Length: 225
Image 1 (cartoon, rainbow, N blue to C red):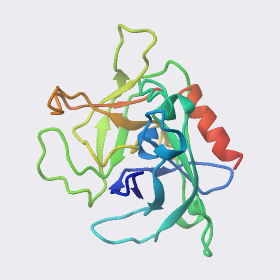
Image 2 (image 1 turned 180 degrees about the vertical axis):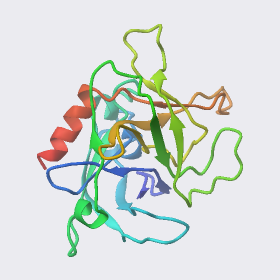
Image 3 (image 1 turned 30 degrees about the vertical axis):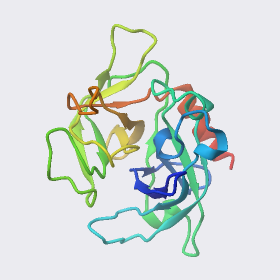
């Protein structure tokens, strides 16, 4: 997914088609749509272009433009990465149909409070950098598979989800997916990593905001669009 920042810089994140009433919605991270710094309307990214199935220049399913985007006020005003680094983008339908119909599927979702542990999950994205990796170029879909965990088990008020995954920048917004093969569901989205004072990544932990009430409110708003 490509977009321009408020400063006019071309950037990209990852995103996934999510089940919605309009059949034209994708799920991503809040920081992929807004700076999260309290800057209001000036903080929104612009001119989103979603390219499902992209691989090394190939666009087998074409391009989709955005009609509107949604993120919690807790993200846009406060930059809350614990619970609110989540977003939905409603795309414009094309002459050949809605996104879900053209792509052939959309991921379901499970947004619930206080749940962090998912066995047999996966996270997908288009990383341009990673932990101790030099072979990532943003041009191919990659994934990590394994189990998620509570990122901060000693803090009952922090239910961020942790995944051991070396993907970094570019994979932001990529879905954490869990469930049977015939019913995979989004349970998180790649949000942030741990860095030192020099902004160097310290571990292969990849974090998602808790996907609870804020995530549910965002998808419900998108469904009403």
